[in-house]
Each structure stands twice: as C-alpha cells, then as structure tokens.
Length: 464
Ligand SMILES: NC(=O)c1ccc[n+]([C@@H]2O[C@H](COP(=O)([O-])OP(=O)(O)OC[C@H]3O[C@@H](n4cnc5c(N)ncnc54)[C@H](O)[C@@H]3O)[C@@H](O)[C@H]2O)c1
Image 1 (cartoon, rainbow, N blue to C red):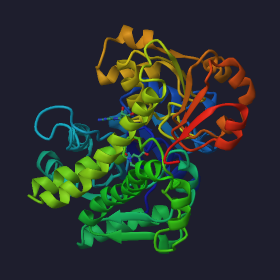
Image 2: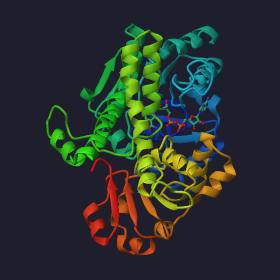
Image 3: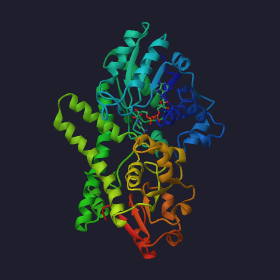
Image 4: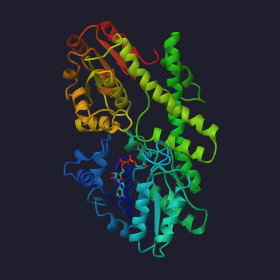
C-alpha cells in the first residue's frame, strides 16, 4: 500500500478531536478530516476563536490553531470524508446500554454499527478501518461482517488502535505516549495495514513504543488497562473507611506502599470515587463479556471495583449528612468542582453528580462552582438521572460563577474536583462569610487541613 495521505475520523469528541489534531500537527503531509453528525460540535471546532473549541484540554487550542485549515479539517460532511480517505478512524461513543438485553452493562454498539454501514455504503475503494473507540473484544469481527456483506467488493482491513490518553493531560499523552497499541490480522494484507498505521505514528513516536498484537489482544488490552487503573482507585478507597475507624491515615498508607517499586505511587490517591466516561463503562463491559462466556468468578471479581466506587460516593454524601446533625434539609452546601477530574470540562459519571443527587433527596440546597463546566451541563447531568423533575433540579441547585459568592452563607463546602485553584483561595475570607461551625468535606484530600483548622474550619478528609 502507498503511504497514507488522507485520513478521516468519524466522531469529533474527547478522543477524535485531540487525537486527530495531534496526528495533523505531527504529520503535515497527511490531510486529516474529522467528521461528526453534531453540527454544533463541528461549528465549535471551527470557531474562529480557537479557545472556544468544545473540548477543554491544556495546550489543545494551540495544537488546533497550528494545524486547522492547513491539514486538519472539521466537517459534518461524513460521506465525502469517508469516500476520500484511505484510512478511517472510528471514534464514536460506545456508552453502556440503557435498554434491552445487556442493559446497564454491555456496550451499546449502535453508533459503531451505523458507522460500519455508512462506510460500506459510501466506500468505493479499499480502506483501512481503525477502531479508536473502546470496544468489546471481538467487535472487529462484527464490523468486518457488515463491511464484507453490504459493501461493493472493496477490501477492508480492520485494525484495533485503542486510545490511552487521560483527559486533563491529553496533549502531553498524545505527544509522548507510554505506548501506542495496534492490533491487526496476521495475514499478508493485515500486516500491510498494521504497517501503514505504524508509519503514521512513527512520524513522532519511537518505534519501540509502538506495540503490535492481534486484534483481540488489542481490544481486550484497553478494557484491561482501564479495569486495572480503576481497581487501584477502588483498592485504596476501600481502605479509607478502615483508616477512619483505626486512626491510620490513608495518605501515609499510600505513601508507604507506593514507594514499593512493585506497587508504584500512581493512582493511589484516596477520593470520593472515580468518574469519567470510561472506567465504569469499560469494567461493566468486561463484566458482561466474562458473564456471557459463563465466567462468573471473573465477572464478580471485576464487578466489585464498581460496587466499591458506588459505595464510596454514597458514603461521602452520608458523611456530610451525618456531620450536619443528620439533616441537610434547607441547608446550603457548596460544591467546589463538578468535572470528574481537574483540567477537563468533562462531567460524565462525575462523583459530584451522584453526591448532589443524594443530597437533593435529603432536600439540601446546593450551590456549585466549577471553573470550566457550564451551568447547563450541570443541570443536564442531574436531569439525565431522571430522579426528579427538571424544575426541582433547577430549584435545588444554583450554579454560581464566583467561588467566594458560592460559599457565602453555606453550612458546608464539599470539594468534588481537585482543581489547583481551590488550594490558593483566601480561605479566611471564605470562613468569615460562612455559617458556623463552618465545615469542609474534602472529597479529594486536596486542601491543607491543618491550615484550615487553624482558621477555625471543621475539616473531614477522606480516610484521615
Ligand atoms: N474520553 C476519553 O478519555 C476516552 C479515552 C480513551 C478511549 N475513549 C473511547 O473513545 C470513544 C469516544 O469517546 P469520546 O469521549 O470521544 O466520546 P464523545 O461522546 O465525546 O464523542 C463521540 C462523538 O461521536 C459522534 N458520533 C456518533 N455517531 C456518529 C456517526 N454515526 N457519525 C458521525 N459522528 C458520530 C457524536 O456526535 C460525538 O460527538 C469511546 O468508545 C470511549 O470509550 C475515550
């Protein structure tokens, strides 16, 4: 195959946008077109003011500014982009199914199938299809089935190339990834396709960091990586409750075990629980696949990671209630942070949503401040749960753009996201404006508890 010069990516979300922007930046000789059905999203990617792109990631606007209009294009014309490309990345969403068989666990592959059918309809020459979305093991065979049975005789090679970027550090991760993983068929045509994608990444990534495997190993590795990462969070969180009973301190425990080189220090930060669009969805998917093969011990083992995470979110909300004398009815509780982690505006599965929902059941009045999340997103997240009427969410939650105002008159502050700016607030000023006793529930163990206590705050950390 001749070298790739035209790439199309279907899906301009948190993965499609940044990954394609980086390929375009590093490979000026390749024309990259990112397409999406969502017109608003594409318009935002094309906004003249590059700070208005729809995904907030440190450094991403600069990458887009450099390549956009040169060899990076965003468009809603999905069919033309498919027809023109030699290589098509599929980066559409694969959420947990909300209906029918597999509801609440299996990945909903509706959008993947639609993409495959659209490619089959439009393609009139050979193409390499790259699964960038996270997919259950053996999805490539379903895609291949659709392409070979509804296509017009064109040849398709399906590669799996899961994305390991972390939101909040996407640009760094894409610029210098620990590894890139490419799975393909072990046939002459498969090997040629794998090589074509290796050559794209080799424009900036050292060859030894580009791993090649069979398609199934690659698909399963992505689910496994997320399951391991989430399991570390649940493992450390499971011990926070024990620390609170025994006067052990989880930060000290984490430091003590993290210095063991076999364990390592990363992902040992105790918190209110993990969120984000991937961890829960991918583990549920793993659990579902294991069960579908009758592997109930395997499924139960991984399911416990989710059970512990749900427990941790509920426990945090219950601690707030208990500490506010067993009632939060009519009490103002201020949430600092709504995003699922710092340096992103993504709120999917954020712990804040579930803690807020729990407190709203107890008729608390919640004020929210987040530096990057817009008001409508916060209401949309709560409405999505369908636990109460939309008007009630509007009434129970006020979104305030100034953190000091948000804290005024509050009974308690809950830290839900580890945004750096929270550390440098004028906490004396905040203390002075709150009701007393002024309480802080630090769901991220972010703030200097001793300093806050010396001001007069009552501070509850996780596992402290
Ligand atoms: N967000 C992450 O950090 C992350 C990291 C690694 C992998 N992933 C995986 O990548 C995939 C995409 O995740 P995301 O966070 O970018 O999702 P997203 O929801 O932000 O973006 C998906 C986009 O695909 C578009 N889309 C859906 N069907 C389409 C179609 N038929 N034609 C054109 N556009 C279509 C949607 O409109 C949406 O804009 C998922 O499988 C996810 O698990 C995500």
